[in-house]
Structure formats: structure tokens, C-alpha cells
Length: 170
Image (cartoon, one colour):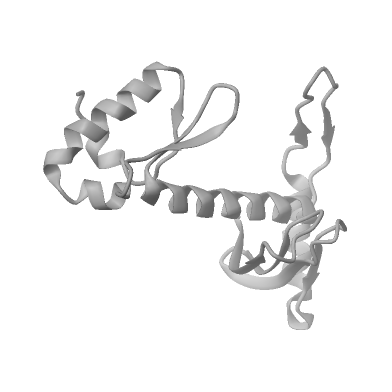
């Protein structure tokens, strides 16, 4: 059983207090509903298509059966947990979609990494994208060495386009 979002449309420009988006909700590979958030701070609206009422109810029951969602406390604040529901699962799927989009975009520019404090950065080469640099096999040892240096400094590499070149040590 799997929940998915497809046909996601995101508007950063319309996003104010929450992310403005619309998407189709799929359950077990079938489109059962849609989700939308107008970006003004309200909840995400998740609804079914009239002919998919039963499948949508099954998706709701599935989402409720998932483990509680745990929110970690920060800055000395205590965390909390909430029962899962379809709206929360859709919001998490959308957050994952945004994350994947960000990683894909920044991976083309340079080595995209997260520092131990959670800050994200891009290590790039002036006038060159990482995509262009990787087209020349002679540059791979240089990129590999930089990746290992960043990792040794405690950073996590987020790129989705370096897996093939990181199999050997520099």
C-alpha cells in the first residue's frame, strides 16, 4: 500500500505562510483524490473524486494506521507527536517532493552538502557547473577528492549525481 503525489504544481510566488500547491493523490497506483493548499497559512485540503469515494476512504484508513508523526523539539523546547492522517501524510509527501526538487537543482550547480549544524551549501567552481565538470573524466579525481574532504569535515553530501564516481577512494 502506497500513497503518492503526482502532477504536483507548486507556486513559490503564491506561498506566504504555507506552500501553495496542488497535486493528485494516488493510493495503490490509482488516482483517488487531490490535494491543494492556497499558501495563506491554512491546512492542506485533501478531497476525493466523486467516483473514488471508497478508494479514498481506504487511503484515509491506511494513513491513520501509520505510526504517529514525531516532531522533535528545538532550542530547548519539548517535542510532540500526533496521530497520522491523510492530510499530514500528503504534507510530508509534498515536503519530500520539494526536497527532491531542491537537491536535483543544486546538484547540477556543484557539490551540495549539509553541514553538521543543518546549514546547506553548494561548493562550486566559478564559471562551471558540476554537470559540465563531470562530462570530462579527467575532472572526476578532483571532484572525488573534494567530496571526501567535505565528508571528513563532517558534512553530508546531498547530490543525486555523484554516486557513480564515489565508488573509489581518491
